[in-house]
Image (cartoon, rainbow, N blue to C red; front, side, top):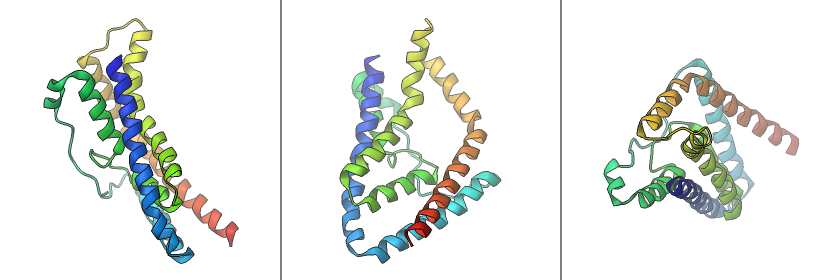
Length: 190
């Protein structure tokens, strides 16, 4: 249970650090003026629209992700250290596989906030959401009086993989919702 807690805290901390850095890096972009921010938002809206339609159509478009996984050999250094490190890397996002454009739009949103604290808040929520399936599975097994081990973790992972077509629908709707709300916000601001 301690490893699960360390993993979750690591995921939230790793994501929050990335969000804070993006918020700080956005300060000079926003300082360039409204035109630079408007162009950045326009690019994000166009990308969200294209990728949202692609997700709903079942077309897989490339995203700038790495295809690196945390090495299993790291587990030899002790379960708590491995869990915390894995959490930090997974939470940060760009150290592992993230094949969803929404992550990159979220980083852009953190940057355009030009606020490290806003970036921390947005990305901490991302880190918690990214850790949730891994963190909740052993807790739910324990509450049901069942043993949780590597076989159960593999079973959960296989179920999540088969759930992907449903996630494509959720991702597509989310991306189009982001694009639509951004357009509406821009129209309302004039």
